[in-house]
Length: 385
Ligand SMILES: Nc1ncnc2c1ncn2[C@@H]1O[C@H](COP(=O)(O)OP(=O)(O)O)[C@@H](O)[C@H]1O
Ligand SMILES: [Mg+2]
Image (tube, rainbow, N blue to C red):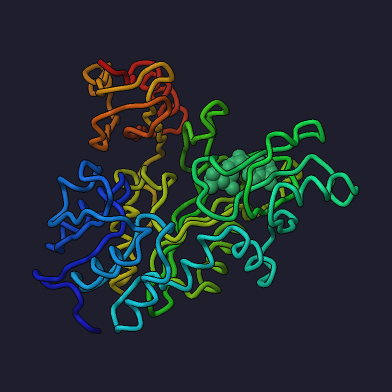
């Protein structure tokens, strides 16, 4: 096997948010030099990486110039200038995962078409060019609420998603090319992170169950093992394996799924990178999702994904009434609870519901971890000065 990683190897990471920071920290264990591209010089990864490069991931010139500085490019986010990646690939540069895979995933419309073409169960959908087209379809009786509208490009953390319960809610429609899909009666939301290397080896992390905060539309809490029967866990792993293989992806694929009230599984969306639902793996799984991402992109053997102990992860979100320079309240009390691991991302300023960090809580039983996580949620607060 080709020896990719040497002490002068430069891994380029596009974007320097918390996922980029945690990837940089994992890479430093192997003496990999990390270069990070982000438009914010104060982004979480900047102080941790070998070299920070200021620039926009949406700019053709910035991405091409960055790509020429490094030996391999990978990502913490899929919303990147694809034409720049294609140009770099044409120069013979290594980009993992491949730009064409990113192009499918960054467009929710192409994602849905991919699922349909590969027989992956997903909510029935249609594509629309504008909100006017959606209104017309409703007026003509071709589309009947309830349904869920999703902008094809650029959505994240619930921004870019509108749930339309009835025809009098059409004012909430978003503007732009969209996927409109059937609303699923969701019993649980789960996620499986699959890793695949260039030799086609695949390993999946155990399913996690995600609980959303309705106010912020953000994951509020997640836990592993998920509260699903073994046969659903096996089906979810099979689906994630099928998808990562069909996409011919090297790296990580985070697969968000719904379990509906009848017990059926539906693929919601995928991300070609580390995911919020895998943060617990840093402490609670033998191989963290970030180490696994590196193993996968470098074509190393993939690491064990065995859960060491039940874990609950809570996102540390900015308090709804606080904006400005950040102040964390309750750190000392939480540090005093066994099994509590606090991760702060290094964002200097908080905003309502901004993701500022996360906490993983481990305990011999999931019930105990849940109780401790509730204490952490009540105690650890992200406020401003
Ligand atoms: N078809 C659907 N039926 C019911 N709820 C949905 C549907 N699609 C999305 N949702 C809800 O909206 C959330 C955000 O949608 P998602 O497509 O995952 O967008 P994002 O990119 O913001 O994560 C989901 O986690 C789920 O709670
Ligand atoms: Mg999602």
